[in-house]
Length: 315
Image (cartoon, rainbow, N blue to C red; front, top):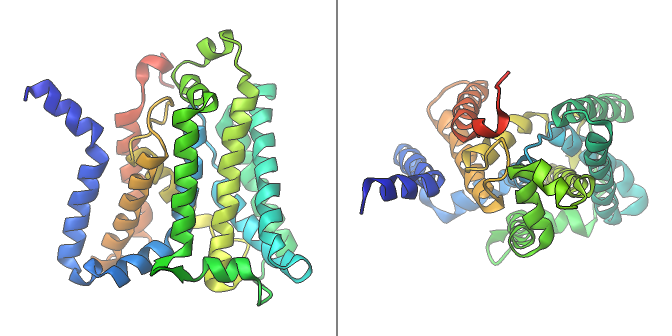
Protein backbone atom coordinates (compact mmCIF):
# COMPACT_ATOMS: atom_id res chain seq x y z
CA UNK A 1 0.00 0.00 0.00
CA UNK A 2 1.47 3.34 -1.06
CA UNK A 3 1.77 6.42 1.10
CA UNK A 4 -0.90 8.26 -0.94
CA UNK A 5 -3.38 5.40 -0.57
CA UNK A 6 -2.79 5.33 3.18
CA UNK A 7 -3.43 9.08 3.39
CA UNK A 8 -6.65 8.73 1.37
CA UNK A 9 -7.79 5.84 3.57
CA UNK A 10 -7.17 7.87 6.73
CA UNK A 11 -9.03 10.88 5.31
CA UNK A 12 -11.97 8.74 4.20
CA UNK A 13 -12.27 7.00 7.56
CA UNK A 14 -10.87 9.74 9.78
CA UNK A 15 -14.11 10.26 11.71
CA UNK A 16 -14.40 6.54 12.49
CA UNK A 17 -10.78 6.51 13.63
CA UNK A 18 -11.34 9.49 15.92
CA UNK A 19 -14.53 7.89 17.27
CA UNK A 20 -12.68 4.65 18.05
CA UNK A 21 -9.81 6.46 19.79
CA UNK A 22 -12.11 8.61 21.93
CA UNK A 23 -14.33 5.63 22.78
CA UNK A 24 -11.33 3.56 23.91
CA UNK A 25 -10.05 6.44 26.02
CA UNK A 26 -13.42 7.15 27.64
CA UNK A 27 -14.29 3.48 28.22
CA UNK A 28 -10.88 2.92 29.80
CA UNK A 29 -11.55 5.75 32.23
CA UNK A 30 -15.14 4.56 32.82
CA UNK A 31 -15.44 0.78 32.14
CA UNK A 32 -19.15 0.84 33.01
CA UNK A 33 -19.75 2.68 29.74
CA UNK A 34 -19.21 -0.58 27.84
CA UNK A 35 -22.42 -2.07 29.20
CA UNK A 36 -25.34 -2.02 26.75
CA UNK A 37 -27.65 -0.49 29.36
CA UNK A 38 -25.28 2.46 29.79
CA UNK A 39 -24.82 2.88 26.02
CA UNK A 40 -28.57 2.75 25.40
CA UNK A 41 -29.27 5.32 28.12
CA UNK A 42 -26.53 7.58 26.78
CA UNK A 43 -27.93 7.41 23.25
CA UNK A 44 -31.49 8.02 24.48
CA UNK A 45 -30.43 11.09 26.45
CA UNK A 46 -28.58 12.49 23.43
CA UNK A 47 -31.14 11.58 20.75
CA UNK A 48 -32.36 15.22 20.51
CA UNK A 49 -28.82 16.39 19.75
CA UNK A 50 -28.31 13.62 17.18
CA UNK A 51 -31.48 14.52 15.26
CA UNK A 52 -30.41 18.18 15.23
CA UNK A 53 -27.05 17.12 13.80
CA UNK A 54 -28.71 15.04 11.08
CA UNK A 55 -31.00 17.92 10.07
CA UNK A 56 -28.24 20.55 10.13
CA UNK A 57 -26.22 18.48 7.66
CA UNK A 58 -28.37 19.37 4.66
CA UNK A 59 -27.89 23.18 4.76
CA UNK A 60 -24.16 22.67 5.36
CA UNK A 61 -23.97 20.39 2.31
CA UNK A 62 -25.18 23.43 0.36
CA UNK A 63 -22.45 25.59 1.87
CA UNK A 64 -25.05 27.32 4.05
CA UNK A 65 -25.47 27.47 7.83
CA UNK A 66 -28.61 27.18 9.95
CA UNK A 67 -27.94 28.81 13.32
CA UNK A 68 -31.60 28.69 14.38
CA UNK A 69 -31.92 24.94 15.00
CA UNK A 70 -31.52 24.99 18.80
CA UNK A 71 -33.93 27.92 19.22
CA UNK A 72 -36.39 26.17 16.89
CA UNK A 73 -36.16 23.01 19.03
CA UNK A 74 -36.94 25.03 22.18
CA UNK A 75 -39.86 26.82 20.51
CA UNK A 76 -41.21 23.52 19.13
CA UNK A 77 -41.07 21.94 22.58
CA UNK A 78 -42.98 24.86 24.08
CA UNK A 79 -45.64 24.98 21.37
CA UNK A 80 -46.12 21.19 21.44
CA UNK A 81 -46.65 21.25 25.20
CA UNK A 82 -49.06 24.18 24.97
CA UNK A 83 -51.08 22.53 22.19
CA UNK A 84 -51.20 19.11 23.84
CA UNK A 85 -54.37 19.79 25.93
CA UNK A 86 -56.33 20.64 22.78
CA UNK A 87 -54.70 18.45 20.14
CA UNK A 88 -53.24 15.59 22.16
CA UNK A 89 -50.67 13.57 20.26
CA UNK A 90 -51.49 15.46 17.06
CA UNK A 91 -49.62 18.44 18.51
CA UNK A 92 -46.32 16.71 17.67
CA UNK A 93 -47.24 16.35 13.98
CA UNK A 94 -48.59 19.89 13.77
CA UNK A 95 -45.41 21.32 15.30
CA UNK A 96 -43.07 19.37 13.00
CA UNK A 97 -45.08 20.36 9.93
CA UNK A 98 -45.19 24.01 11.01
CA UNK A 99 -41.45 24.08 11.75
CA UNK A 100 -40.69 22.56 8.35
CA UNK A 101 -42.74 25.27 6.64
CA UNK A 102 -40.93 27.99 8.57
CA UNK A 103 -37.57 26.43 7.72
CA UNK A 104 -38.52 26.23 4.05
CA UNK A 105 -39.44 29.91 4.14
CA UNK A 106 -36.03 30.70 5.61
CA UNK A 107 -34.31 28.86 2.77
CA UNK A 108 -36.46 30.58 0.16
CA UNK A 109 -35.79 34.03 1.64
CA UNK A 110 -32.02 33.49 1.60
CA UNK A 111 -32.11 33.16 -2.18
CA UNK A 112 -34.75 35.78 -2.86
CA UNK A 113 -33.20 38.45 -0.65
CA UNK A 114 -29.62 37.43 -1.51
CA UNK A 115 -28.69 37.57 2.17
CA UNK A 116 -26.12 35.15 3.64
CA UNK A 117 -27.67 32.14 5.35
CA UNK A 118 -26.01 32.83 8.70
CA UNK A 119 -27.61 36.30 8.78
CA UNK A 120 -31.13 35.02 8.08
CA UNK A 121 -30.78 32.11 10.49
CA UNK A 122 -29.23 34.33 13.17
CA UNK A 123 -32.23 36.63 12.90
CA UNK A 124 -34.54 33.62 13.07
CA UNK A 125 -32.69 32.44 16.19
CA UNK A 126 -33.53 35.71 17.94
CA UNK A 127 -37.16 35.58 16.80
CA UNK A 128 -37.67 31.98 17.94
CA UNK A 129 -36.09 32.64 21.34
CA UNK A 130 -38.20 35.75 21.84
CA UNK A 131 -41.44 34.05 20.82
CA UNK A 132 -40.76 31.08 23.13
CA UNK A 133 -40.09 33.40 26.07
CA UNK A 134 -43.20 35.45 25.28
CA UNK A 135 -45.50 32.43 25.02
CA UNK A 136 -44.36 30.98 28.33
CA UNK A 137 -43.58 34.11 30.30
CA UNK A 138 -40.13 32.53 30.84
CA UNK A 139 -41.78 29.66 32.75
CA UNK A 140 -41.92 25.92 32.17
CA UNK A 141 -44.95 24.34 30.48
CA UNK A 142 -46.12 20.87 31.54
CA UNK A 143 -47.16 18.31 28.94
CA UNK A 144 -50.67 16.90 29.23
CA UNK A 145 -50.28 13.20 30.19
CA UNK A 146 -51.68 10.36 28.11
CA UNK A 147 -50.38 11.39 24.66
CA UNK A 148 -49.19 8.25 22.88
CA UNK A 149 -46.58 9.93 20.64
CA UNK A 150 -44.63 11.29 23.59
CA UNK A 151 -45.07 8.04 25.53
CA UNK A 152 -43.72 6.02 22.60
CA UNK A 153 -40.71 8.31 22.09
CA UNK A 154 -39.88 8.05 25.79
CA UNK A 155 -40.00 4.23 25.83
CA UNK A 156 -38.08 1.39 24.18
CA UNK A 157 -38.68 -1.35 21.61
CA UNK A 158 -36.62 -4.56 21.59
CA UNK A 159 -34.39 -3.00 24.23
CA UNK A 160 -33.55 0.04 22.09
CA UNK A 161 -34.75 3.59 22.70
CA UNK A 162 -37.53 4.56 20.29
CA UNK A 163 -35.98 8.00 19.98
CA UNK A 164 -32.79 6.43 18.64
CA UNK A 165 -34.81 4.25 16.27
CA UNK A 166 -36.46 7.42 14.96
CA UNK A 167 -33.05 9.06 14.49
CA UNK A 168 -31.83 6.03 12.50
CA UNK A 169 -35.01 6.08 10.39
CA UNK A 170 -34.48 9.75 9.51
CA UNK A 171 -30.80 9.07 8.73
CA UNK A 172 -31.74 6.26 6.34
CA UNK A 173 -34.40 8.43 4.67
CA UNK A 174 -32.05 11.38 4.09
CA UNK A 175 -29.18 9.09 3.03
CA UNK A 176 -31.45 7.51 0.39
CA UNK A 177 -32.58 10.93 -0.85
CA UNK A 178 -28.99 12.18 -1.11
CA UNK A 179 -27.73 9.08 -2.92
CA UNK A 180 -30.56 7.97 -5.18
CA UNK A 181 -32.56 11.07 -6.18
CA UNK A 182 -32.00 14.06 -8.42
CA UNK A 183 -32.67 16.27 -5.43
CA UNK A 184 -29.76 14.67 -3.58
CA UNK A 185 -27.44 15.09 -6.54
CA UNK A 186 -28.52 18.70 -6.85
CA UNK A 187 -27.73 19.30 -3.18
CA UNK A 188 -24.17 18.02 -3.63
CA UNK A 189 -23.82 19.92 -6.90
CA UNK A 190 -25.13 23.07 -5.22
CA UNK A 191 -22.49 22.78 -2.52
CA UNK A 192 -19.69 22.03 -4.97
CA UNK A 193 -20.49 24.76 -7.51
CA UNK A 194 -23.70 26.76 -7.09
CA UNK A 195 -23.26 28.75 -10.30
CA UNK A 196 -22.90 25.60 -12.40
CA UNK A 197 -26.09 24.20 -10.86
CA UNK A 198 -27.93 27.43 -11.63
CA UNK A 199 -26.73 27.45 -15.25
CA UNK A 200 -27.94 23.86 -15.66
CA UNK A 201 -31.49 25.02 -14.87
CA UNK A 202 -31.90 23.72 -11.31
CA UNK A 203 -34.20 25.82 -9.10
CA UNK A 204 -31.77 26.91 -6.39
CA UNK A 205 -34.51 28.39 -4.24
CA UNK A 206 -36.38 25.07 -4.09
CA UNK A 207 -33.24 23.07 -3.27
CA UNK A 208 -32.32 25.52 -0.52
CA UNK A 209 -35.89 25.57 0.80
CA UNK A 210 -35.92 21.77 1.07
CA UNK A 211 -32.62 21.69 2.97
CA UNK A 212 -33.74 24.30 5.49
CA UNK A 213 -37.19 22.70 5.83
CA UNK A 214 -35.51 19.39 6.69
CA UNK A 215 -33.24 21.14 9.18
CA UNK A 216 -36.12 22.89 10.93
CA UNK A 217 -38.28 19.76 10.92
CA UNK A 218 -35.50 17.75 12.56
CA UNK A 219 -35.02 20.54 15.10
CA UNK A 220 -38.71 20.34 15.97
CA UNK A 221 -38.40 16.56 16.34
CA UNK A 222 -35.51 17.17 18.73
CA UNK A 223 -37.68 19.48 20.82
CA UNK A 224 -40.46 16.89 20.96
CA UNK A 225 -37.96 14.21 22.01
CA UNK A 226 -36.85 16.46 24.87
CA UNK A 227 -40.46 16.90 25.96
CA UNK A 228 -40.99 13.13 25.86
CA UNK A 229 -38.02 12.68 28.20
CA UNK A 230 -38.98 15.27 30.83
CA UNK A 231 -42.77 15.72 30.27
CA UNK A 232 -42.36 19.49 30.35
CA UNK A 233 -40.91 22.22 28.14
CA UNK A 234 -39.09 25.46 28.78
CA UNK A 235 -38.19 28.30 26.38
CA UNK A 236 -34.48 27.50 26.73
CA UNK A 237 -34.60 23.70 26.93
CA UNK A 238 -32.50 23.12 23.79
CA UNK A 239 -30.49 26.33 23.55
CA UNK A 240 -27.25 24.63 24.61
CA UNK A 241 -27.37 22.20 21.66
CA UNK A 242 -26.35 24.57 18.87
CA UNK A 243 -22.58 24.31 19.30
CA UNK A 244 -22.43 20.50 19.77
CA UNK A 245 -24.78 20.07 16.79
CA UNK A 246 -22.47 22.04 14.50
CA UNK A 247 -19.48 20.19 15.94
CA UNK A 248 -21.13 16.86 15.14
CA UNK A 249 -21.66 17.81 11.49
CA UNK A 250 -18.18 19.13 10.72
CA UNK A 251 -16.27 16.57 12.82
CA UNK A 252 -18.07 13.81 10.92
CA UNK A 253 -16.43 15.05 7.73
CA UNK A 254 -19.11 17.28 6.16
CA UNK A 255 -17.20 20.27 4.80
CA UNK A 256 -18.44 23.62 6.04
CA UNK A 257 -17.95 24.96 2.51
CA UNK A 258 -20.41 22.37 1.14
CA UNK A 259 -20.45 19.56 -1.38
CA UNK A 260 -18.71 16.91 0.74
CA UNK A 261 -20.08 14.64 3.46
CA UNK A 262 -23.49 13.26 4.34
CA UNK A 263 -25.86 12.28 7.12
CA UNK A 264 -24.07 9.02 7.91
CA UNK A 265 -20.84 10.95 8.45
CA UNK A 266 -22.71 13.42 10.64
CA UNK A 267 -24.12 10.58 12.73
CA UNK A 268 -20.56 9.45 13.43
CA UNK A 269 -19.66 13.04 14.28
CA UNK A 270 -22.63 13.15 16.64
CA UNK A 271 -21.32 10.10 18.48
CA UNK A 272 -17.96 11.87 18.80
CA UNK A 273 -19.71 14.93 20.26
CA UNK A 274 -21.49 12.67 22.79
CA UNK A 275 -18.20 11.09 23.85
CA UNK A 276 -16.60 14.53 24.23
CA UNK A 277 -19.43 15.39 26.63
CA UNK A 278 -18.88 12.18 28.56
CA UNK A 279 -15.13 12.66 28.62
CA UNK A 280 -15.46 16.17 30.08
CA UNK A 281 -17.85 14.86 32.74
CA UNK A 282 -15.80 11.87 33.90
CA UNK A 283 -12.59 13.93 33.92
CA UNK A 284 -14.08 16.03 36.70
CA UNK A 285 -13.96 19.27 34.74
CA UNK A 286 -16.76 21.81 35.27
CA UNK A 287 -19.75 21.58 32.86
CA UNK A 288 -18.83 24.85 31.15
CA UNK A 289 -15.65 23.13 29.93
CA UNK A 290 -17.84 21.33 27.37
CA UNK A 291 -18.27 24.57 25.42
CA UNK A 292 -14.51 25.13 25.50
CA UNK A 293 -13.90 21.62 24.16
CA UNK A 294 -16.58 22.00 21.47
CA UNK A 295 -15.19 25.40 20.48
CA UNK A 296 -11.68 24.02 20.03
CA UNK A 297 -12.95 21.01 18.08
CA UNK A 298 -15.09 23.08 15.70
CA UNK A 299 -12.23 25.50 14.97
CA UNK A 300 -9.95 22.61 14.06
CA UNK A 301 -12.63 20.83 12.02
CA UNK A 302 -13.61 23.94 10.04
CA UNK A 303 -9.95 24.72 9.32
CA UNK A 304 -9.41 21.19 7.99
CA UNK A 305 -12.61 20.86 5.93
CA UNK A 306 -12.98 24.31 4.33
CA UNK A 307 -12.40 24.31 0.58
CA UNK A 308 -10.39 27.52 0.19
CA UNK A 309 -10.22 27.17 -3.58
CA UNK A 310 -14.00 27.55 -3.70
CA UNK A 311 -14.05 30.61 -1.44
CA UNK A 312 -11.29 32.52 -3.21
CA UNK A 313 -10.53 35.08 -0.52
CA UNK A 314 -11.02 34.35 3.16
CA UNK A 315 -12.33 37.38 5.07
